[in-house]
Figure 1 (cartoon, rainbow, N blue to C red):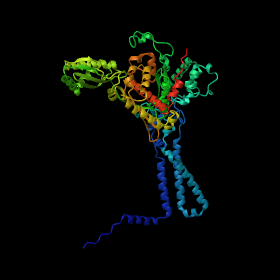
Figure 2: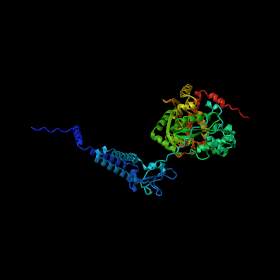
Figure 3: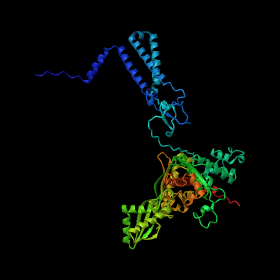
Figure 4: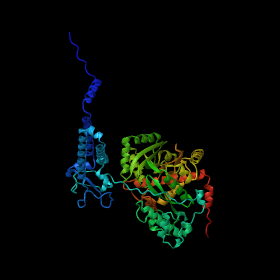
Amino acid sequence: MTSASAPSLTIGMQIDAFLSNLESIPSTHLYVVVIAVSIVFSFLLLNSGRGSSMAMAMPDSERVVVKPSVGHKQKAKEGNNSDEPQPKWHILKITNYVATTAFFISVIQFASDATAYLNDSNALLSFLVIWSLLLCYFFGFFGISFVELDDFVESVPAGEQVLVDARGKPNNIQCSPDPPVKVVNIHAPATSAPVCTDPASFKRSSSSTIPANLQELSDHDIATLVIEDTIKDHQLEKLLDPHRAVTVRRLKFNALLETLGRGGDVLAELPHKHDLDYKRVLGANCEIVVGYVPIPVGMAGPVTLNGESVYIPMATTEGCLVASTNRGCKAISQGSGAISTIVGDGITRAPCIRLPSAQEAASVLLWIKEPANFLKLKESFESTTSFGKLIEASPTVAGRNVYLRLRCFSGDAMGMNMISKGSLAVIECLKAHFPNISLVALSGNMCTDKKAAAVNWIEGRGKSVVIEATIPKEVVRSTLKTSVPAIVETNINKNLIGSAMAGVVGGFNAHAANNVTAVFLATGQDPAQNVESANCISLMEETPEGDLWISCTMPSIEVGTVGGGTGLPAQASCLKVIGAKGGGVNPGDNARQLAHVVAAAVMAGELSLMAALASNSLVAAHMAHNRKPVSK
């Protein structure tokens, strides 16, 4: 018969036994142990931080200091200059040891005869004072262990940091500098009250801030007053003669554009006197020249577009257009700013080719749709251009005809000449495989160029852009002089339902063509292409917070920054204003920037005009500001 094994102790029973054993230990000894453990733990924390304590413990050969480049302010003297006194960090470490030792001695002395000290009030007070001071020291310097030495020096751009050791020599640690951060200078929204769509602008402005000797001031001084908002921009023609007002305004915008990195006299080649270099026109822009028609160029903005301030040059003879756009720019900049995205980029040309039968035409279509055969067409196309890339070839059959819609990337050029030349090479490639092909027309109107067409609205042509912004309800009331529900309702019934009832193609907007054409004329684009470039649907919604959300979707903005009219001095000057003259660093960058600016101008114009319609102030504004008697 086996004997029963001894019962095992449970965890609870073991804890009870441990507590019973603790009762046999004198309280003074237990107190000393607890205090000792606490002090050791605190001391380890105090001397194990990543900042000054860590730096003190590191050998000189491993220590790294960030040396700011010359010219940057510092919160303390540079810690890596051997000619200047350095902080005595080792003293702090010695002080830690002294304070900790004193604390241990006082605790041990108190524990040796705790009962006597507790009954002696003077002795007890002495101990409490000593402990309080030491505890204040410990807790006061507790956070220092986590302070980085680098925090004593202001941070500097990554590209300007130098790693050195404690002796001032370059450290061998290899660091990859962060990419340079682009400095963006955001200008405040225009403060001048725009005219035409703002009833408040009908009233005369106060002249209390206008200097009495204004006429005696230099043009530069007056321009400074305009920038400082001492004088309103739109008052210049009344305060000065119109010719001098233009000169002052040019100085103002040159100064503002210079802060955006546009260079010096950006508007130097934009004529404001009677001047045109006809040699520039010869063989490039016009024939049988007898003169030129001056079109006034106004400047709308700034508008915050994709995180940057942009000014928009607009050439127009329609009164109120620039002022109304300016108000829209102000509202956008007071809100979220405009965010513009390009969702498609490709100019098109659609040659019409003809075959002996519909069956042969169908066989050409099927051949083109084979990926391997498209690569042959692509190779032929791209052999004619340095920047052009054939993106797509879409054939459509109508009987014996094949309409081959070619879409290509054209860099910073608008691209019609480029794609026309490449299209001829594509036709030659097709003829090598289908000898019976005959070219009817290099453009078979399925491109579709300079005509309203559903294919551009659906498939896109040039730059396909969508732009949006959120306007706070307070800005809608104060700047646009209407309410969010009113402008949303007006947009639905006018731009959406009204346009649908009219059966428009791509015309679900208030007046997109106005702003497209004005920017086109100013920047040397083909104004006839405003037909398809002004395809736009404007959508407005009230957000859950009661603000206004607006977007403009424009699938076929056709622009370029090289070639055509962009080479003329005045138009090139306007391209400089928006930072998109000539070819970009990457092919296509400047043309895309111009497309963003066109979309921003359209959205600003839509916003302001719809606000005027919603508040029923449009007619009164035009009668007040756009009916000036013609001077004899």
